[in-house]
View 1 (spheres, rainbow, N blue to C red):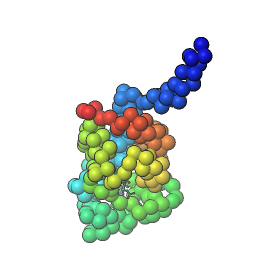
View 2 (cartoon, rainbow, N blue to C red; view 1 turned 60 degrees about the horizontal axis):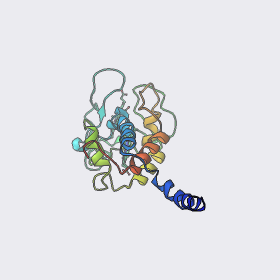
View 3 (cartoon, protein in one colour; view 1 turned 45 degrees about the vertical axis):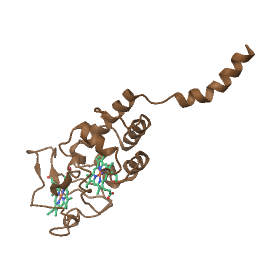
View 4 (cartoon, protein in one colour; view 1 turned 180 degrees about the horizontal axis):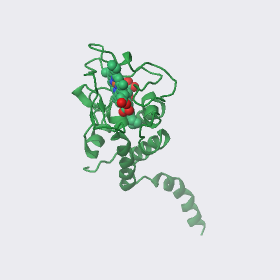
Length: 190
Ligand code: HEC
Ligand code: HEC
């Protein structure tokens, strides 16, 4: 009996460490991350090297490329042609008017081309997101920090003016990234 108690004592901290997240749980968490990343509120900016933002899922009309021939170009802010800020002013006030250019308390711009999610599969985005070479140099912890603090992500979940929102919240998204990371960032194809 004494022995058994001693063993249980020693075993306890190890058991706590052994409570690892399973691959299945990690993949389920990734599914929820993908549901957000593939939503138009994110993919309209995360377009890759086409350089033109999208007007998908605005709630009216066909999905299409941003009107008025807007291009982000190398600068990602359209400095070479018409800068985003010409219409997307920097302002913390609410987005209330439908079809007005959305604005946030941060300079509106496209992400680096490597953060391309538009028309990509879950496996493609997963492989890209877990690799710092293709995710803007981030660890999973840094990605979590980004989704909790980024004005862009925050806007995506509260875009106002009748725009649809991705499932969940910034907190839920950070939690899902955490679970996915703890499971070893599994992707469907490996
Ligand atoms: C207005 C354009 C815009 C929208 C909309 C947008 N993003 Fe981004 N995103 C960016 C930019 C720009 C970056 C590059 C980092 C930076 O400059 O802040 C970025 C980077 C990221 C990164 C990588 C972190 C990093 O340090 O680069 C993640 C993850 C991300 N965005 C998630 C999202 C999610 C999720 C949504 C939708 C809820 C979203 N973004 C919507 C512009 C946008
Ligand atoms: C000439 C004005 C103008 C310029 C310049 C402009 N935009 Fe827009 N943008 C708009 C308008 C207006 C809308 C809203 C369209 C609607 O909802 O009907 C919009 C919407 C968007 C959306 C879609 C938001 C959503 O709800 O998903 C993105 C993404 C976007 N713009 C990115 C950019 C980027 C990046 C730049 C700079 C490279 C830029 N825009 C430059 C006028 C502009």
